[in-house]
Image 1 (cartoon, rainbow, N blue to C red):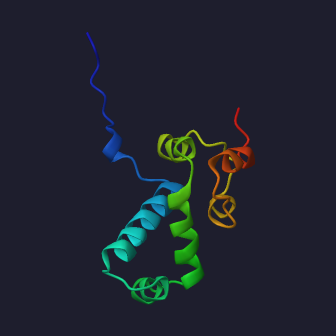
Image 2: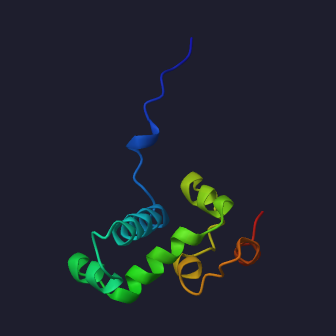
Length: 102
């Protein structure tokens, strides 16, 4: 007999990296749709610094395998949000080179 699983994926709390990635995509969508005219406007609405908004929006340019690792929680633990969000290279190969994969 198979025991039912008491935990389902949507029962788990998102990690800080997952939340940051979601914020970045939401804020980029606000800019693209015209809901917000600038990152400064988003920062004012959200009560955060505009450089924080900029760094979170940078996460939307991450290589697909890095995004998958964030969502699957398989990113090496030594990789920090700041490393991914600040000064992110635009080329995916360069991004991958910054992440130490097991």
